[in-house]
Length: 293
Image: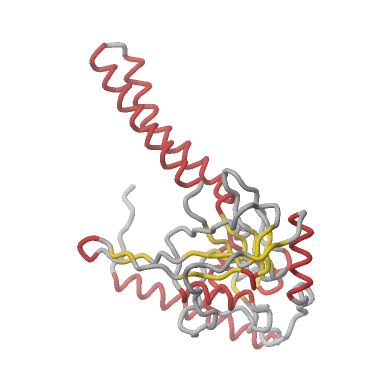
């Protein structure tokens, strides 16, 4: 069955209808008397930097050492209020994918499967045995599917976790290093050059994250390269999310609702955070509070 293609006017009408429904739901929550009702914020960390640094050291199993000065200056941490979308977020955690990682391994596995299938298929056509042709077709079809399933299963290994409730950042897995924890204050962003795509195809930022402190058991400062690079607006929006003195910006609510509907946390390792469910109406599957903490 062919999928119906919507016109721009139909898409616009659907978007307007969704906005009207959302607005109607907010009016309903207001009339019921709980939209502006403040909820307890006891689940937030409420601890100073020194306490969280000690907590991170305990989780890592060792103390911290101060990194040598970085060669390039760090980006300004002050938010400009121009950009608020931060990607995968369930209200408790923001998940940011590093690069390169499992996705690159799966890409090469898929490529090898494609080349292997092509080789089997050609060999079968030349030599004659039908099972070579069948094996080639199977690799063509099953290979990409299996690598996609493998990526979905292991994708969480690539993700950096920014936890608003603890004030800590958990780094991703790498081939030679397990994840470790560090306070958000000890993570900075260094802006790199903007790479222009050929023939006006767009541009990509090359900024990355840098640690000012790191676990003493490492010989050198670990680097954190992010998938697709990073720009200052994205980084400061994450910092704003980590600031427990301010509610989560409404632009992030869509991502929270999406994870609630899928019953998945932002890391993809478990169900939606139980503590965040009180901010969402279970019938409408929409944020039902004026402020989400």
